[in-house]
Image (tube, rainbow, N blue to C red):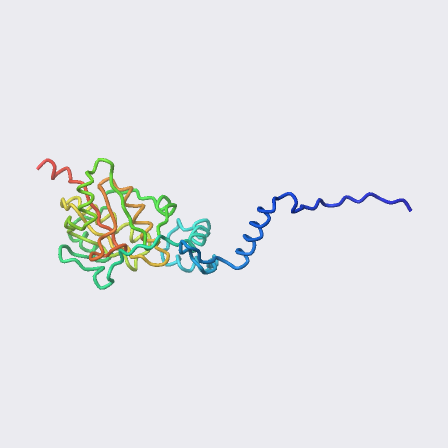
Length: 253
């Protein structure tokens, strides 16, 4: 019976690589099979176990935002294994929500006070959740932003907590929509009454969604000159101090 020619799959030979390259590949294979190991730069040693999509969805369900879709869930799932650079600027939780220089309100109290004062509008701030969520930050991230024309001397004073804040809002327990309205309302009220600085307490939980949103929203508000994470005694990385422009009425006074 005549022999038929059979097409054989090509075999990748290790001879294509140098001895040194083969050794490196073998070492990499060994390290990957064992998981992440500690090196001289103190890299993480544990294996990365990302949560499932359902677990991430359960974590963010409480925020009730239409902008957290399947793509965002996958992104948050991927970001869960990312570790920030360690920052020793941690707040004492007993001091995080207190400051004798100003008054702090939760979201509901802020809304009631605004209604009582007749300030029910939010200054038509068109704040994009998408822009905020596409630039996620971790709970320990130090937030820092200023417009280019703001003098560094003034910005440094804000960072050091030397600029007195007059009002604050605590976003703990809020969903994204409630938090967005509270931030906009706080800025609007402060701007109208010519307050130079306010504080926003966003917390620094595992998912840090509210912190991510606050970081994105404030960059979109024209009345904001600068903001930064608060000094340790004023909330640390769980809060931001916000510096505001002078109102037109104050400029003309």
